Image (cartoon, rainbow, N blue to C red):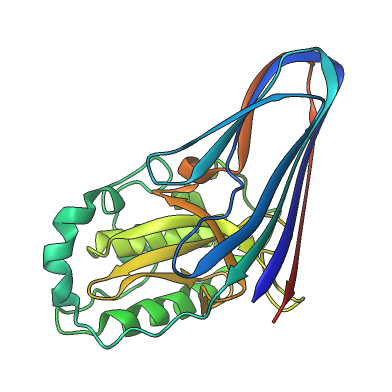
Length: 274
């Protein structure tokens, strides 16, 4: 599937701001499931732009506006070809034993996914070593989708996972952090994915950057699960990057001097064709 993405971030300041520095993670990932045909980053006013790859392999752009300004626009445009995912063969939980030592960073606690009895908190029965791993992960995706309600006004970026567990209302970020909390406590290496979603009007989370989980299935690789939409991450999912949690892959964040209390507007458009 070919997807055309336009992601626009605009800041408006009541007073002049200067030395605005933003860290931008909007470049789609290049991997087996998708190929990047083009990517362009446009900034107004004129800015100094550099880039590097972060610890997890994502391309990060650094946008530095030196001069005083009341308006900052960062627009990323990309064309990406996505490919269908293949289903993994049946695989028991016991195959994870050797894989855990090589993927410790996706098993340990992080600020937004702290340690806790998350399987019990979310009412998930712990599997046995003989249970099928891919089946369990898909069943968990379905369970979380039915257990939680999608509500864009219920949580914020800094809402603790324990608070989300109490009221069960939130956005894709919350759904994904909940799945990571459960799977990591069960010894399944799992990572947070930031990206885009082509919905065609029938999926949740396409109005901004989307989030889902990738879980490791030994001898297969990393497979994406989207609890917000109760599906695998397939051709309609465009990956930007992955990390331990949202904080590792937040799309745009930065600092500036002056400016007063600025106003932020974000618009995401994803167009797709088979």
